[in-house]
Amino acid sequence: MSDFLQEMTDSSIARARNAKQAQTATGLDSRVSSAHPPIPLRFSDAGFDVIAEAKLASPADGKLVKGPATVDRVVALAENYAANGAAAISVLTEPSRFLGHLDHLEAVGDAVGLPVMRKDFLVDPIQVLEARAAGASGVLLITRMLPGDLLEEMTDQTLDLGMFVLVEIFDCFDLETAVRVFDREVLVGVNCRDLATLGIDFSRFESLAPHLPDYLPAVAESGITTSEHVTSVAGLGYSMALVGSSLVSRDDPGAALAELIASGRDQVSGVR
Image 1 (cartoon, helix red, strand yellow):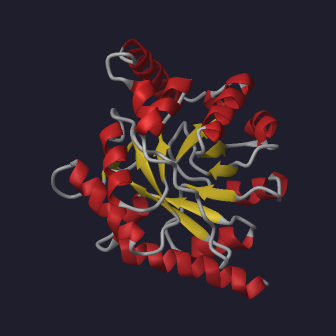
Image 2 (image 1 turned 180 degrees about the horizontal axis):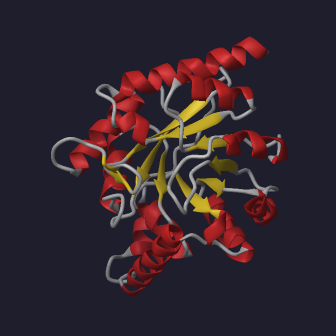
Image 3 (image 1 turned 30 degrees about the vertical axis):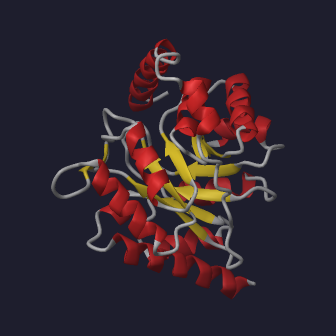
């Protein structure tokens, strides 16, 4: 595990421990029961969709928004994405390197009529409950951070709550672990970011594509910045892309999103 991922794991373990200690005081179980139902993730008949990410900062690029990094900025991004064709909104809740918070997730869920996904470095089932209590309709689970039994437990827990799961892999070793949940209805994400250098290895999309189960939606994560990138991953068989920093940093994130979606769908329609 890279130093960065180990840092995120240690931080997440501490946050999960704090959540367990506060579980009764915060009424987590009752909040899960009373939360509005998850919104199903729906796929376009056009054959390509984008999960657009609302975030304030990233370890690779630093602060992404101009001016104050507030929850209102996250909500404004999400509303812009929702108006321009996003299939779902990914919201960062990791606080130390992404300036995220569970409040951001809840605020976005209240503001848009789309499924909202908690993107974080989740290591404990209580964090899935936190996501559901905050209104999330899905979560990201990073295979490399989760032993096979825990990946299965958290996947089953998420699906039992009516939420969707994006299972993220980096290489064939992760794929061998993740295959344990491929009999469930999950999304399989390939992240092309090198977690040691935080650089991008775009070739990873191509090298892993032939090994992904063709009966599950494949999601290209990280490194998607141009229409040409979208055309490439759509041509490789990815039915979705998760796009964040390259949208947030644009003057008009919504217009940039619409352009990426159109490129992916043009590619799919051209090969049908």
